[in-house]
Image (cartoon, rainbow, N blue to C red; front, side, top):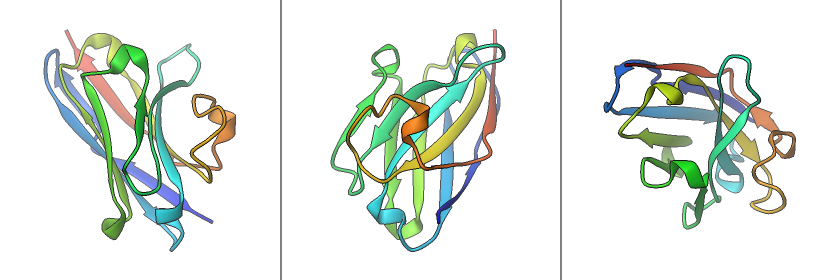
Length: 125
């Protein structure tokens, strides 16, 4: 069992930056691939990025490359999402999720085993 708690969301102006954190409970954190998703009102949950268990491999949504960076610190049971050059269309609830294997369809939410409760990010124009 893995429990996930996100933090770091808030209100930011266009062009600003935020760093989201997701702290996991459970000794198995370092064996899971970790992902970030986001969901805007009235839209489906959207894949943002994933990182493998060691942090050596990452994969981002094409539309977000160059602005969003995923990383992890297994000693702290934490995964991060650094978001730069934020735009109003980045406004959404951001979720972290744990996946047992860094394989398969990593972009599909139903491939993930555990989810956090989400943190709101609002970008003002």
